[in-house]
Length: 304
Image (cartoon, rainbow, N blue to C red):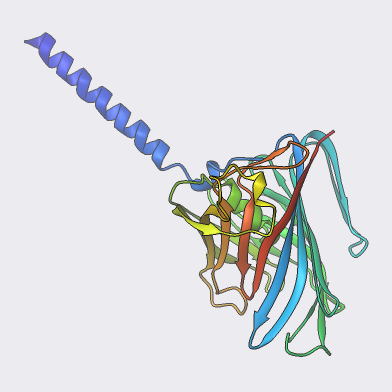
């Protein structure tokens, strides 16, 4: 009888241990499950950009480059910002983006993140119309952000006036933080094909605070027609669209320009470039506020 009791007891204990283990795995924070698709190649994507609101339409182009570092020295500098950033024997990623619009509007940025996708440094420079209905007033913003464990230092200017400060937040291990210019990359690192949600914060230099945001990934797909040659995807004969997962990022605060959800459509298929490089789940189309972006070219160069 004792042997039976002991056997039953052990079975119960093992069952409980397995249940606890599974629960722990299922409760793992989403940002700790993010996965890199960039190891051997620097990937560059080019998008048509169209602003449309209240009868005003302007066209432009966006280029996003994702460069992996696997022990190489990293150096970042800008002609518009006197400071620079270096990181020797660096493991992580450098994300560079350049947006240009009609009426000589532009924005360029660089974001540096480590291999756990924790933001380390960023800078951005922009020259945009204050009111898109007019062409006589522009706003110039420069911003350099150096991230540390629980806060970041901001150096920059708005229309020539100094805009420096410090923004505090929680540790990345418990509550992730991402730079605004990194959003198109975040959505591609989430586990596609699943329904998941991730909460994080974004430092905003203009207000010297953080915005609470939520990224929601759908497990269902919708058909998206890109501008890029569709032959690079392995699709059924006669197909003209690619099935894509949709991710949305929304802000909890009612701050002008940030409260509207932004949508990203990520391909469910890999894309093979003319050079033979395979791009995993490219970002096909996305919408940020009143601008729609559609992929028209993608390339990859092997990292030395």
